[in-house]
Image (cartoon, rainbow over the protein chains, first blue to last red):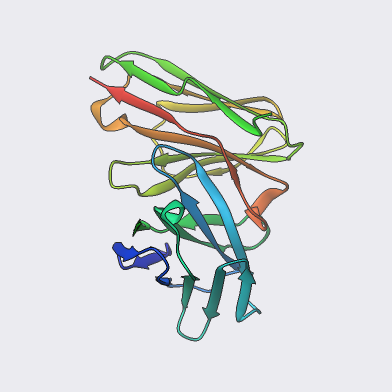
Length: 112
Length: 114
């Protein structure tokens, strides 16, 4: 399948630490996106990185993309208890009628 | 104002019944989607509509029938419900086809089939 695969499946850290989540995929993509899902809620878009970009920042978030390795990472710096959520990567492939395919997510727990 | 709203939020029903989930977006987007999230949190696309026309129809049993009366609404009707249909169904929208930008998700509709 072309879906993104996140690693690790679960991550538990202390407040103030950094959290790094990885995503790997199998085919050429148009862009890669990261979403957050709080328990019992819908997904919220965090950041989009295009296939010709290598790094992008948004507040405490830093995303990298390595198309040669077909992988991406999401770094959350100085984590807070409110960052506790599941994080999904999603890859877009397939041209103008493209399909956004989600991975299974990384469950992040930030302990106060 | 809720950007993408789904109703109902919870739905409990018996096997064999028919049920519908409604979705509306007030973002002025052209494209709407239905995703299914299973118990392991895996999110899979089911359908995508652009300006009321079906553009993505993944391998989904034909018991599932989407209907888009206008570009702001995309409803999901499910016939002859089965135990395996239990999941959380998410509606989403985006400005254009192909989801080149971000998707905006509703809060989900949790369907439990007994």
